Image (cartoon, rainbow, N blue to C red; front, top):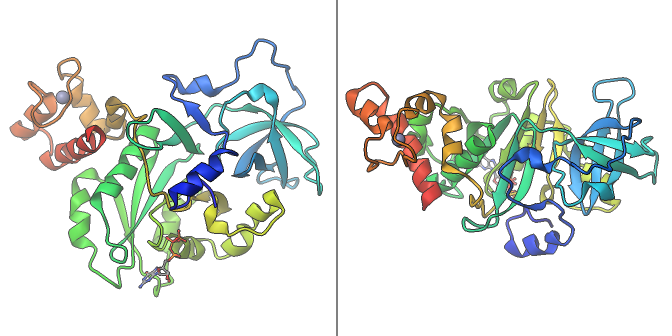
Length: 342
Ligand SMILES: Nc1nc2c(ncn2[C@@H]2O[C@H](COP(=O)(O)OP(=O)(O)OP(=O)(O)O)[C@@H](O)[C@H]2O)c(=O)[nH]1
Ligand SMILES: [Zn+2]
């Protein structure tokens, strides 16, 4: 069990092994090593972190080449407390053969395109990195059993927009309930929505949206995320053996974050159910990044404008009132801002 499971106690259990607990830094690039004495490691090779378990990193080298192979690595001391996340591109030295029993060393983390984080709770400024370099976040929600909660989806959306990751919404178990009333909550967001039922094997549409990019799948336990991932990646059961490669022990796969290659190219990173998705590290202004149309208008807002419905002279509210902006869209942003404030 790991910190990403649905059980908070496990969070503690894992934390002893978890090196991804770092203080918030205003500059995400601050996570790159900056020691003057850093050796060059000119022989280092770059790979993709597929999975992490107890201080061991499963790294894919030579991706897409004839020499593609996995290896297990530990972090070099010089990385200090800089967190390495699944999806990170890392520079590796030492025995990079991937041979049985070999252990390489990660000496550098390459600059990230995106970084998905969470805090333990909303007041906590200690953040944990969940996934690096994801292009998209597939938010999986069941139409019923468990009942969908707009607030939880809002929180995922906030995290995605903050991270600069494109959110997608997938409603599962549509055989159990009509998802449309729930989906009305998100109408103004312009998020692409997929509807799924496990008795329909066709995932072509969703697969097309995931091809060639890296998507992190998130969802509360029991929503049918594993069922969905297995439909997307038919060999997932074999491939999720990566966790066993890392630990050398049998371990239930859905208790750790794993990277799975999609048949048409691209990656899906499956995270176990996350119960708490603290947003203590998110700056409200960062949310606007996901709303480029609104961000342009908000440039004319007074300094420090909250953009909430009662904000004086807020250009978003005024433009919506004038009919220059879609009020649904402004509402959606405001709901997320309220989520963050509340
Ligand atoms: N009726 C119905 N049941 C489904 C559907 N998809 C999944 N289920 C069932 O829902 C339950 C949970 O599915 P999982 O795929 O294990 O859910 P999960 O989100 O991966 O849950 P964790 O493994 O706890 O993270 C299982 O009993 C599935 O058979 C669906 O489309 N319709
Ligand atoms: Zn404003």
